[in-house]
Image 1 (cartoon, rainbow, N blue to C red):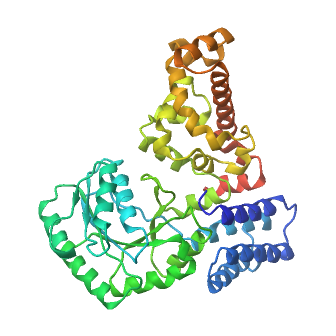
Image 2 (image 1 turned 30 degrees about the vertical axis):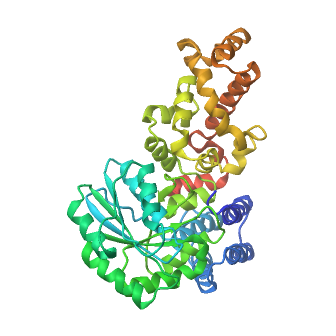
Image 3 (image 1 turned 120 degrees about the vertical axis):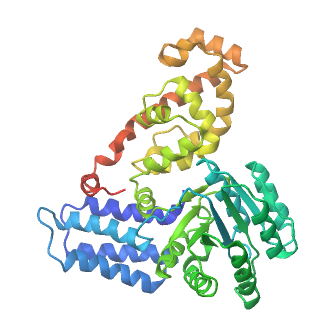
Length: 443
């Protein structure tokens, strides 16, 4: 999961407060100290931690309690609200319209990879996107962008002399709705890079200028965001490599402190692992409230019909629906990531699944399609009617062993059971926090 260690710490804090029968000043102080410890371990700036701590204590201890609410309810609500504020407060998505986007950043930030992911993001929403290779300094940078473009069947523009020349030719020739311009980086933002980016910006006349920074920067992201904003001007930030470091929370908080908004986060190595950053949904996933909206979006992007996606979420899916789920799995990402987006939190749900289920399940699913294709229409719609003799016939028709078919049937039932358990957030709604979450629309 994104920010796995940090997320576990935050989840434990919420779990602890919901377990209190009574909340007083002593418990609030202790909880704030625990939160501070988690943020320090995630490399968050001390000044920001102090500001967040002060806001929570002031709201919970120094203000009159809202009518009908206990201090415990107020504490949970403020913890949630202040973490959302701390990590960005609101979502700043991207309009689906014809536009030009310039990506800037230092060497190694992941601009070229982010360009391909962003193009894919537009494609899944019905807009054609083209990639422009304006990094003419780094060896093989243009080749890398072209390889990314081929993966998603997008045009790439690389003709022209120098970065400015490539941009001019692309602007002249392109017919796509969206043009995404990759640019050169340096080890530091020096005068030469600033001059090149300003000239490129003048030629491109971008609608958006996104600074690309890696999550591993942690609190140093604040300085980088401020410097680029002053010297070049940016409209938003893409944070890459969120799945590979514990410092992602610090990077998010640092960008907010720098007065800039995070627009996208990279959550993995696959071309589709790019998400619009929404602080409310992000915190919801961290504390175990889930992100059903995000999961539904991924399902649609992967080609799954809305009706099937809803049946799967409700745990009412047939073997035919299960087959469609398997086909869509590649586009939706790993099963672990999908579980992270379900109410109740991935850790609780994983305990309900057989040992080793997640580690090798995606590979096994490739075989399962053959087994499902060997079933009769009645069996696909009514898998509970599949007997031992039918399993033998299905195994023979699909080239699988009988025990493999039985394992598939067991996995199908386990997944269905887990989805039923989380329907409408039931697993989460059992605790006292859920009542507060429902009341205030949290998550």
